[in-house]
Amino acid sequence: MHYVFGTADGALFVLHAAISNPLIHKIVAYEPLFLFGQPGAEEFKTLLEHYQKYAAEGDIYSAMESLTKESKTYLFVNIIPEFIMIPVWKLLLGFDA
Image (cartoon, rainbow, N blue to C red):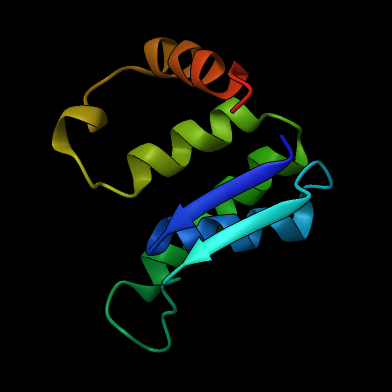
C-alpha cells in the first residue's frame, strides 16, 4: 500500500492511517471530516480506536472490516458476517491500483 485516497470521513481515516502505517507514502484527503464537540464525536473516536488497535496488530483486514461496519453507513453491510467481510477486504486490498 503506497497511495491512499479518502473523501469526507474516509479522508479522516486516511489521515489517521498515515500517522501509524509506514507503508502509506502519499495520501489524498478530500474534504476531511473533523468533529469538535459535535454529536457522534465519541462514537467516531471509538471507531478510530478500534481501527488503530487492529492496525497496530498488523491486521489491516480486520481494521477495514471494523471501519466498514462501525461507520453504519449501509445497513446491508452491518449484517454481513465477519467470515465473509474479511476475505472481501483481502481481495480488494490485494489489487495494486
